[in-house]
Image (cartoon, rainbow, N blue to C red; front, side, top):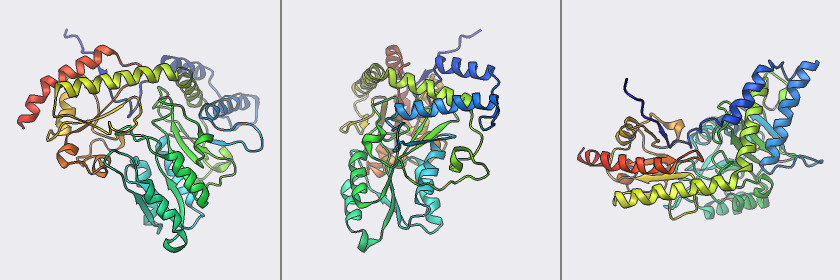
Length: 391
């Protein structure tokens, strides 16, 4: 029997593989056969304790305030997409004015904003420089002329881009919004476990995180809300989580999320150091082996695990498929847009040459990635690239 080739997994921005400690904790909780955490009997209270312990722990790990009259709030959701939808639609629902998003946001933010637009809301898009960073001057201009150009209800700007890894100036944008009395949301899905994350220091009103980007389970995320921020529910039919996100909470997923977040933050600096080393090693070896290749966003500060690299005039989908057949998992952009023949909206927004956009591939490493796997990826690219260029 032919031996199955080991998978080299470099698509960690789409999802990470669950940590064994997370699996063990979830298995432990599953074996407890927990009751509904909303039930008032002893079995329900036991389940409720697990959920609330996870809620407080994750909030604290993200730099939220967990004690006192000014405590922040954490709403569990089904993941980053739901959290972003709840933030965009729920924060602005009862506030007149435009919703501002950048043109490099995750599809879940852009689609939520577009939906708000169909309901009559004005949507404004922050443009992006060729280095992958949004133009804050544009936002500053809009905020300074609110009285003459119309009001702004909400600004949503991701903390770091999911395709290029480029950091965005969220703290500066939040300061501008605070002075103008405008609500600010950030999608920090790719940041938790990859860098220090401090909700209070960012001074945003809402922040999205999710478990499956940090070796936790798929199916649970969260929206952090600053103390006293009002949000309108987008789901109905229950009183759970103060009715702001109704539906029976899942203690097993919450417990898995808690362990994943704790592991990620506890080992943050050693994980970041390793991921950055692997990312740089992959970038340097690809550029040395394939001189025409371009590291997109490399001139900007980036997340330690993300490498957007373009092979000009190469069909990105054909290349991704060839790599997959070689046992290498990577992507051509956001997982939520995979399967689409459309070019990456992020690379297009950066105003890169169409031939560069055409050949854009994303590699994303994790703390589990091996040095030997980096060499295998480069060897595979060198073998594949000649036939890609002939097409």
